[in-house]
Length: 128
Image 1: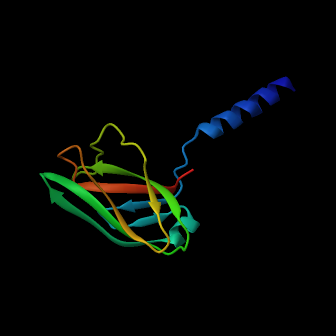
Image 2: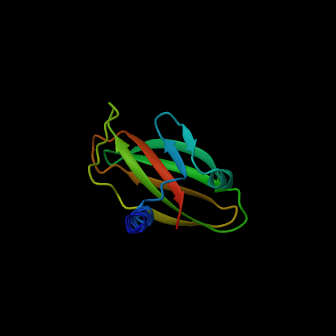
């Protein structure tokens, strides 16, 4: 019985340490959007997804409009890939926070640290 209690306690501790990555995944190359969170997906409308060149680096830009009357706090993180689809930034950037006001239009963007980065994917989730 004692082993079961210890195992259950460890499972709860490990579950608390897991990252919450449910949300939206946006692929800049294919313009595909994967909704893993239906509530967040219904509250944010993706207006445009594009990649531009700035200072010899690719910059990913995603424009949104809020479809929700209240404020939302979201987090996002960009991932960068080369022309062959291999991830080029070896160190992950931290999650960034944005406060989205009701019915506001906003954009998020990031430039690739690595000059070989040409394609991006961005993950968006609700802040905890």
